Image (cartoon, rainbow, N blue to C red; front, side, top):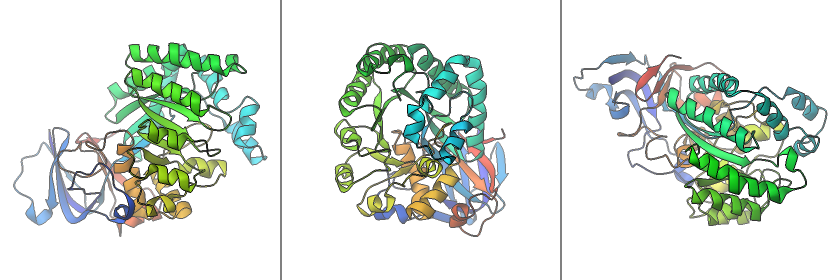
Length: 413
């Protein structure tokens, strides 16, 4: 299958250096070509260039971009989009002044979602989740990580991850799965946290591995959730079964999760609303990707991560949606970019790299995704004609995406 896209107003997100990530000042440099074409063959980018240099090509399908801008697809490295029902009552509780931690102490939050998920069948979960997956595909996401963590029992964690596997097998979007049994302590184990950690390490992780259901292991390492020692034990248990670590860190307090993630070679440390200079220094030179979730800070009314300080310190940073029912009920990565720009002082170009190539790096997949590079998977989207690439972030709610390309084919879902 060969697809030719012609008359592209501008291609952005070009990387001819095959970089694993983009860091520091380079994050504000945008590779682009105006008046361009792109060829995808057998699902990968085969060529691109200026229209006047387009050689004769026999294509199975030709798409006229009509002057629209072509962006690499978003790479959303942190979502919880398999869940049952919704939690708008907690939305009202927040409006009435309750904090995230107060809602959790009252049995809401993650435990509320766990109760709902326990009552849902695998088929019901799939039907709900696939609507969200199609939603994010329409909004430009071509690579997504999906976590478990609303099961909190072996049976229900496996149920969630089987749904993720089905999505991965049936949809053209690239999917990675994360086991997050340590999202909270299950109701039956409240007051017996050590026993719950034992369950995660000795029963859940081996069961998940036996079915090959997870690429990564994650832990909510934060005040009121799991300690550094528990987090280390869990991610090392996952590592024994081939699951790379990712850590929820520093959302509610400076927890030490960033330093632990660096020490243990975690792919990413995520949230980072609470960050000091020590955390920034720890990340310098590390492979661990600091990943910010401004949708959660927006929805919860929390402080935003110090993106500007991290970039000026020379770090690469990633952006992700945190799509979940309680603290970020949206997978709109364009909105995430707008929040990064308006609330965290990231330029639209920095936000684009953070939401594409660096997001792919946070999943260990930047060799195949996240930029317009010959040989990479041909995942991209095309907008209506726009005055500049920055307009896409500036006019963040205007419907602009006209075509979605996944694995070198036009997705018409």
